[in-house]
Image 1: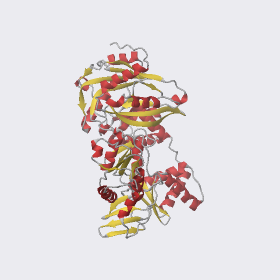
Image 2: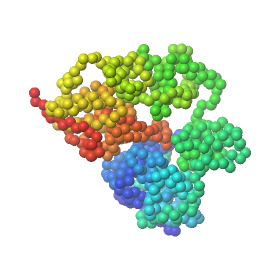
Image 3: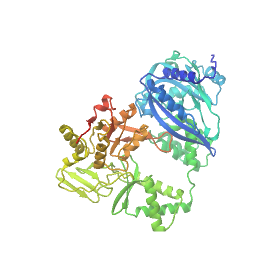
Image 4: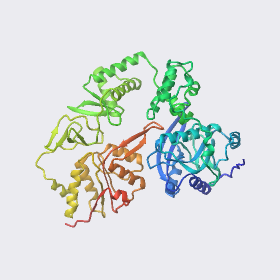
Length: 615
């Protein structure tokens, strides 16, 4: 096998190699997931910061604006490494293993490996010559292109494919990277690992690529081993029985998808308590749960997090228990929402306010409660232990309440949140203001109160504040306002366009103040999907002003927000966990031109064309 390393590329050949690489791995319509992550070492521990996560179609990937954006993130004082999802994503915004539907290649990540060593490993394993060889900067990446893509639409099919990947990677001594949602370094950019501490940047570059060198999956199937994620008697249990280590291994053998991250963290904590060192623990768990998919790097991150947990201190435990009792005696209600997130309803200005137990508002409320009762201030270790216990009580021992933003449906009525403590209850028989409504709404600092309504008003008077001249448009606008108060139906996107001076922003402000007043009434353009999701999560009404273009991802996000489709983002301060969102919102955009031009958006929109009014 001969693989000759090419001459060091310049900027133009880098771009050409990148295009050739992407052409080999993806079809034009494939969604490619990108993660821009800064990595560095701090006090002997690996640290990560996800700077941006985005999805691009392959055919738009190498366009100048996209490349310019990535090169900018890959440079500067604290640059980000550029990683990509090896398997195409089913749709924009979806990046979990269960979202992978097709596999176009097999791969292996050989860390701290030279090209010569990689060639030897391939020969020793009696594997076919790889289609693509990448110098990652600190190792070698190998890709075997498949002559026919493999469909993986069921859990069984995904497990079978991952077992083949695992066997190929084990054969060449690669890292555990068989997870179908795996991300690897993207060639054509710099490997800037630990650049924050002065480490030299190195090229991640293509060494060899042959697009026509493809293989049938059957050529690798004989290597496959049975998936390790199934529940089975484990030889690791020999000698441990029902002791602490045995219990850890049993739980990891039986853990289900969706609970593995929590189980892995618990396992590391228990193994630390049992006195195991890092290497001994790794040997025990490396073929279990997420450790088998994510490999050593994931294990080290989980182990480091567990090691940072405060050590048990009887005095601290007693104080934490006192704080818990103090909270439970404070006329509060613990509960969890429809996403199983822990919350607490606390007394506030004669009413009740709902707070997330992980929010800064709850931290302030808790500190004030302790100070008012004990005249004491405690550190984060003690408060953290108390908050974790309260969160567990809220999630596992307390009722579920579905939380909404501003509007909700419950008890055969529609509810409108006025100020977090009062709400309007609307039924088929009429409406009225309720001083202590049920637990229905989320509270955010950005929200502004709605005025308490009075009877006898005239809805047509709102037309005095908007520039609508056509009678049909006026009637449509009033109908839109009424329907926008209904919480659980799709509300068409509000699209307003017209030349300068036609009061487009004023129309959006009127709607926002009537339905969902907040500190920010209208927004400028949003830069990425994560910002859009967070804004939509915190607002019933979300308007964007002075928009000159609507990118594909924003168009898709608006459609999902109108119809209530699911969206997800990375959970804060984690590397692999995702937070799932599903909601219906009132969304609108305004611009001089009709910038929303995709059929799927237009089908879900109400459009108002404004003209100058000379009076």
